Image (tube, protein in one colour):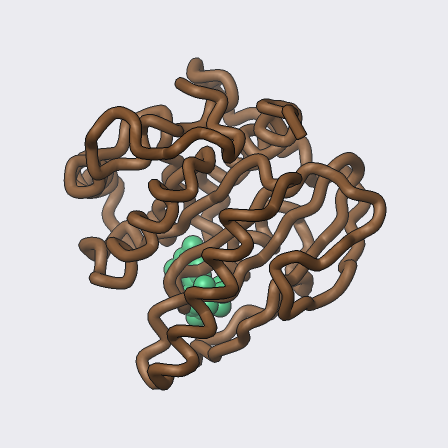
Length: 235
Ligand code: GDP
């Protein structure tokens, strides 16, 4: 894979997938039993919520951003990833916050980008959202990778496709995370993963299948996130 640190044109490879800038995942060989989650033991601090994609946070550190359709399970995933159930607010009624939430861990920031696809958002709100995310993706020098969440049960929506296009254009390293795997039977997880990978033209190493409820895939994702913070550090 390319380093995908945000300075390529992002269009190489010609496919619709984000594969050409896929992120170098954590060890491809999965150990059994599952590896320990390296983020569980880390201190974490909420830095703040910011409306400006050019916000200066001190000290400047690598960033890993999380994005997905509203209600995809992003807050639950962030909480599971760092082992803090109350860190990000989990909601059964999707809201329309348009702020970037920064969390500091030793050596990097987790950035919770606002969810997209909020049904009742106005045209102006959608435009504002796009501007915020596009600005963040284009200009953020410290950004090392995007974790893009998709609900494993659903085919990509138009908003997901639009987001994929933005991600491709940004040239950023992208890891696709299929959420809520516990909602499927065990035997359905693999075919569903294959189906989504095909629909989005994603390579297997760019995909993590997770469940915040069962904990499946969470330690692997944490390992990938940590690995990405030290990759492609050209800026
Ligand atoms: P967000 O809007 O993307 O931040 O999504 P939330 O984390 O707030 O979750 C939306 C809804 O999905 C809530 O009702 C969660 O309890 C539920 N949810 C999130 N992750 C999972 C999961 O892994 N499994 C199941 N079964 N439900 C989940």
